[in-house]
Image 1: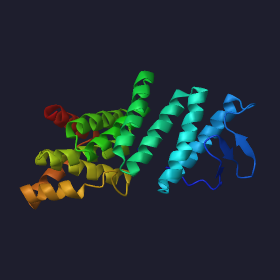
Image 2: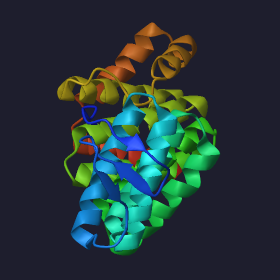
Image 3: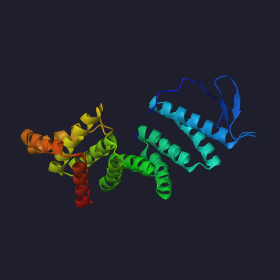
Image 4: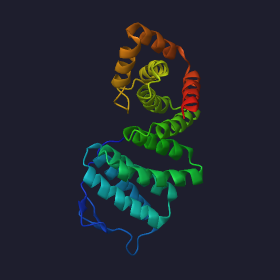
Length: 249
């Protein structure tokens, strides 16, 4: 799940059926004379505003923009756009820690993505659902979902995606007291984040498994296990994580 700059245009809102343009011109959503192309452009503008508001932590405004965009894309029949809005609505709910709201939205998007064989959509949705499962402490579900997303990210050569999902797997492994496996994968995660020059993980809990492992096995053993993970190729890391998941669930 996991950007874009906040939009400069200011949109007034007169309820869900009307968008007021920055220049003061009313655009009736779905009204007479609006062709499919116009509706798509309006929907994409609304979605962009929803994403920007969500990033600015204005989650109420984000929800309203994204709901408007979703309604337009359902009207035009653009399934991929519908799925993107569903996933973004789910992401917005995740940012509010409203997982019971987020889960069905993302599950609907995932079902559509699977039906359409949309690999990018499947990767995105399984990663987000895996994050939710971690937060809800449904650890076996989390491993299956994160493992699928990580494997797809590897097939698509998305190093950051691999790292993000592997970070979640590390957290789960530590919580399940599979500490040596967690330590190896922790070393790999740190290496992958350094490779992509990422400032931090989507899972902000890497310090917790690190502390748990250090307390259990000692600083020296932790360093040894992490060094092993750092020496692995990306393909070896993914295979190691998949083997861990297969032996755990």
